[in-house]
Every structure is written in C-alpha cells, then in structure tokens.
Amino acid sequence: MAKFGMELLNLLVFLCVLHFCNGSHFRGGSMSWKPIGNNFIKLKYKVGFKFNHEEPGFDRCTTDAQHDRTELSTSGKLECESCTEYDKMKDLKWICNDFEESEDSAVGYFTYIYHIPENNTEFDISYEHCCWINLESPIDKYGGAKGWKMLAHVDVSPRPDNGKINSSPVPANIPMEKFYKGCHYHLRIPVYDRDNDAIRCRYANEDKGECPADGNKKACGPNTDGLKINYKDCTLDFDTRNVEEGNHAVNVIIEDYIRPVKRKSQPLSKVSLLFLLYVERESTSCLKPMIIDPPSCKSIRPDEHFEMVIRAEPGDPWKPISKIRTQKPYGMRASQMVDDPDVPGRKMVTLRWYPTPYDLGEHSVCFSALDSDSYTSGLYCTFIYVERDPLQPVPEKSTPGEDDFIVAGETWIVKFNKQVNRPKSSAYIRIVNPETDKIAYQVDVTDSSVVYEDNMINFLPPREGLLMAASSMKIQYELQLDGGIAMPKEGGCASEPAKWIIGVRALKPGELQPPGGIGIGARPRDCNPTTLEIFVPNETVQDVKDCFLHLPEGAVDVIEQVTLTPYELCCPGSCEKDTAGKMGPPGHAGRPGPPGYM
Image 1 (cartoon, rainbow, N blue to C red):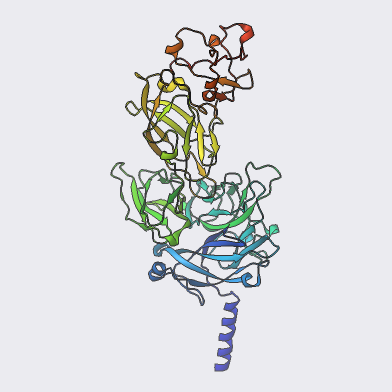
Image 2: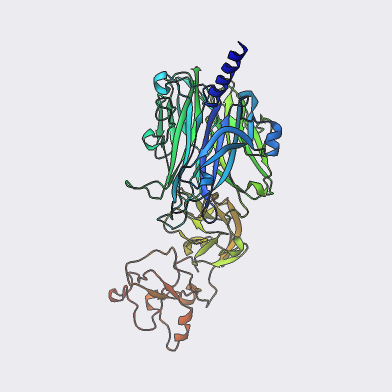
C-alpha cells in the first residue's frame, strides 16, 4: 500500500510538471524590443501574476525582492526558433516592480539581449504557457482554456523610409479592470512608439501563429461578446449588456507602420498585449470616475527628482473616489490619497521618483480611479523616458535668443538640442506682449509655413504685426512655445513648454535689411521667379511710390547687402501696367517694407 501511495505521488508530480495542476496565476503581459549596437536587440517583457500564487519553480514577489530588484523565477520559457543556439530557449525570469496585496496582484519585467541570427534579419520571440486566472466566459468561447501566448515579431532590416533599424511599439501593462454589466465603455490601449510611427491594434489571429497551441482551448481572438477593437486608433468599445459576469481575457496584437499608411502597407513589427476585463453585477449608474488631464509622456534625466500629481473626481457625486490605483516603475513612490484643496470632491495622489542611470530607457506609470462602488475610470498611462539629454529648445542658439532683438521681417529660428520632427497634432508658437498678455502673433506648427529642418523650426511673422502697436522703434515680447511643438527623431517625449523674453525692432535710418532675413516661410507671388529686394525706411522715401525707387549710378557695391527673395515681387497696381511684375531698368530697387513696419 505504501508502494502504491508513493507511485501515485510520483504520478501527480509528473502531471504537475506537464502543467495539468499548474495554478491559475497569469493576469496579462506585453513585449517590446529595440536595436542596440551592431547585431543585437534588447527584448523587454512585462508580466502580471497573482500576488499570492504558489507553485514549484515560481518565486513570489516580496517587499525585499522588490527593493533589491531580485531576479525571480517562473516555470516558463522564452522561445526563438530562428535564433542562435544560445538564444533558442531562455528561462522566463522577472523582477517585481510593484504589487497590490489587497487585489492579489503583482507586476514585473525582465530584459534579455538577443544576438541577431546570421543571414536572418526577421524572426519571432514568444512566451507560451499556462495558466490564466479563472476565466468565466462561456465554454464555447474559451473551451475551458487556460493557456496564453505573447510574442514579438522582430525585423532588423533597414527601414525603407530612412534606412534605420526599426524599434517596436511599447505597450503598457494593463492591470485587471472592473466594469459594470449593462454599461458602455470606451477605452484607450496605452502604447508608445519610439519612431513616431502609425500604430494599429487588432485581435490576435490563430492563422498567423499568434494564439497558444492548445487546440480549441485558448483565450485568443474575438472571444468576448460586446468587445470591439478599433483598428486605427487603438481603442476598445465595450458594451457589457450581454456579457457574462467574470474575467475576460483579451489578446491584442499591436503593429507599427510607416506614415502615411496605405492600403498595401506592411507592418514593420508586431508585439503582444494581453490583459483582463472583469465584469460584475449591474449598477444603478454608468457614470464612471474621471482622471483629470494626465500627461501622455514625460522626459526626465537620471539623478533628477521627478514628481507628478494624479487627480481624480467622481462621475456620480453620490459615489466619492475611494482609491487611486497605480502601477509604477521600480523606486517610484505614491503618497496617500488626499483631498484636492482647490476642488471639492476631487482626490489626488502624488508620485515621486529619483531614477538612477540604471533606469535609463522607457518606463510607464499607469493609474485608474475607483469610486465607492468600485466603479473604475478606466486605465490611463504616462510614458516616462529617462534619458541624459531630453529634447528641449536652446534659447542661446535661437534667433532671437533670450533678451536678444530681431529686426522685424527676419526669419525666426527656434533651435533644439537634437533633431526634430513636426508633431501630428496642433501646437502653437506665440509672440505675446508681456505687459498686456495680448498675442501679437501665433502660428500652428502643423501649418506648412512653419519649416522643420534638422534641429530647427523656422517661421516668419509678418513685419507689420509686431511693430504696429509700438510707440518707438522697438518693442519687447515674450516668445511662448507650447508643449509638443517638436518631436524627437529618435525616441523620447515631445518638447516641454518653454518661453523667453525677446525684442523686435525696426530698421534704423539708412540700415538695409540683413541678407537671409526673408525666405523660409515667405508667401509666393505670381510674378518674376526671383527678385533682388532692398528695404528702405518709410521716412527716407516719404511719399515716393516704390515702383519709382532705383539705385543711383555707381551704387553696385551695395548689391552684396541686398536680400535675394525666393518669392515674386509685384509692383502695386498704382504703377504703370508695363512695369508690373518686371525688374525695371538696371539698378531698379525693390519696395520698402509695408506700412507700420518701419
């Protein structure tokens, strides 16, 4: 009998190794990758597990493990069929960076360096295992499934648009979100792309090898009633009226595309994002709490103090905010939730972090608010980019720089500390009178008159506008730059807001417009292809029409000081018809600046 009992025990242990008695502990995860150096990529995965899960070969998260960044073990493996022999199979380790014991939740991450296989620039890395926490959806949807699959499709061939090596999108881990039955929700999938590519989201597809290989027992594809993924904007619409109560697993594939996306465009890469939606009983109200104006991306230098305040207010005034949940990178601390002193009913939590050089790279902090009935706001995430040199304007190298004067009519240049791209959404450059707060000029940087080149933004305010209200030949302004007027070409967050004091002045009597003052951003006219243009103060020419201005004989040496404009110079209609649009006789000069300029 004792022998039989030992044999039975051995059989049970063997079955456990085959995962038949594996605990239900998986709560979601994601993958991303980026190239580093020659012939290597860095793969980063994020995972969520039950905090209280116990199983042979699985290390739980503890306060000490979190503090020491201990490498913890799981029973999973990372596989790469096309990789080098050394990289084909790797133990799935994790470093716990946050946990919530009351919600039985722990999240962590790990990174591996992969050598790019010789003569093989395209391959898949995947993590396929068991088991999800209990899924309550109908048997015909999941078939009693427990398995999951995360993957990253890597392609390190040069991009066709710029010849550089691509980086994948970076999704944020989504903790289990709770929703009431009978309501409709619109949710954003939090994702960031280092290359500012177009992002698309869809369900994982079994025909493309994106689902776990356990027959019909898998949590994959469109298996949740009422849930729709909006492909183009990476959002979810979730109508819970006919949805089973309980946990619902969602397996999303995120792809990046070169802009603009065309019908036959192919994705540059793809990565997985897996998460849970929990539907509970019906509620008397579908008004959900709100997170107030969370930033989407923040840049910070290592060894600098970072602080961010999260504010939330209830959707239903009879259901006050009970909790602000956070999912944070290692070392970030959240304060106790307190009342916002400025807005009754609003709550706030302050996040503080002091990243070290070890933290260089991308991180995400995600947060949601719960009301007194445990109704969630939905998940919001801020991507935090720890870098030694965040994108920022450089006033001392700009034109005009801080406390510098510029001649009205010259091109303005805002220089940055690295190369920049134009943003996809509106942001403004403003020239403001600091005494009256009146805007003298503003321009949306998405307008084609604003030129982006290398590390510069060039624009040309109208001459007449800046000196119209001046009581003297010069006036002081404040140059104000919205946050987001520039995107870095190679990873990181958009530029932060900036401002500095500048001055605008008129030309002095006898002074010529400096060469190069007109050009970028100028408005074309339908006359001659090019024109030599000289600006003459109004007080010098008085009532003489500009068509009759000409250079005196022997004044050819001043040609070195005139401005060559790329737009046409037309004579006003008050001049003779046959002179309109013509340079006139040799020595003919251009018109003076517009009224109000001088």
